[in-house]
Length: 586
Ligand code: M6R
Image (tube, rainbow, N blue to C red):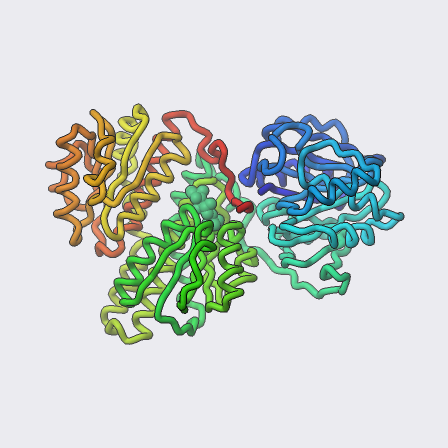
């Protein structure tokens, strides 16, 4: 998992590459590097952030990389770009070359000398092996040997062109006048152009400042459409907020509205199913788990939810179902692997993603897009609530189409879903109170989140958000499970976040609150009911909604709680340690 970029045109390649890499830093920040053709090929690469690079050369053709380490420790030696022995070829790569060991051994036997421990370096040497004055020919021959996943961008000091290829890792081309851009993600070049060509798996492109030729891996030319992107470069910037995460939390009312509008405007997806299996990872998994409760509640059919990485271990029982894959990036390797498996078996499938043309769209029969806009903070926020919006919409519509709810009930549910944008805005009014709560939490090392039913996945999501950005040890539990073991860990003053909506779980949640209070936990409750204040140490009032929709407001309040706790602790909120935005390795 890494970010890769390329530029050919009339501007300073150094500036374009650095600007573009900055926009991709969320994809990994273990090391960074650029290669620029400046009479000869020059390279600067370093361990750590892009700001560590000291580039005292320039040109108008170049490539760059920001790394999330897989093969080889994060250091200067293993930083991209990689060159061949002649020092004329440079490549950057995102993905994993599965057969690199056997390729490397053969290349070493043939006299190639390697400088890194990475899988990627073999690509530069393979191109060198086949190079006879024509980068395009050598590139095609080199990639024919590769197994695994890759987005590759390559240049040669003697040719004014860039070659690139994509298989199971993202790659897009930005089309400017007399200049072209390549990147793992559109925001990388959005301040230069909003015209893009989205490459599909199995495509190679040959790029000069005035032309983009796309081929399949066999060399056959392919006609590609140029698409116009409506996000402004500003959308991808912080827009005055201290962190992307906070900006993205505040964008949720707009994101929910946009997602709902697009869902309402699209044609019905006619799918027949009697069972659903949802597959996703991390925050998207929590959206799926919440979706399970909503779908079962409205459709009365069984819904199972799997982690992307666990789906492969599900035995092939005699079963048929609609498979739903949720992935904001559309590039999560575990989710993609599961989608490939479901496709092979032949299950009907639906993908829910935030990224147009992302890899997941190649493996599913239908796609529902969330319209959250680019999410840069590593912690998923607006993509989560737009995934919820999509799942609720899907459940309400399917229930209506099956005659399971009346037209009046349908309108009532749809109106409540529409109101979620406003309900989330009301959560923002509680921010001061949430900041007070975060001051208590910031002093602790361990905490629990508890919820029941629909709000059990929100307890999991609250805990994930807290641990990933504040590094406080937080665990989410179904509230009723505490007494079966975890309650042994409650210690004096330990924060327990209790989700207490006004639904059938209310009484039982209060009993669980009393259980942990009796063991001296510090209970912070999220509830629309002010009576709850009597039983807890601290109450965060969330807006009153139909309890079926309470996950929206609770999730947003918990996002703010994590954000402010991490801020008090001085954490790198948008780029937490050991994490990357999109996890393209299994
Ligand atoms: O792009 P995806 O939705 O497939 O990503 C899945 C997880 O990696 C992601 O949700 C991760 O858990 C978030 N960083 C959590 O905030």
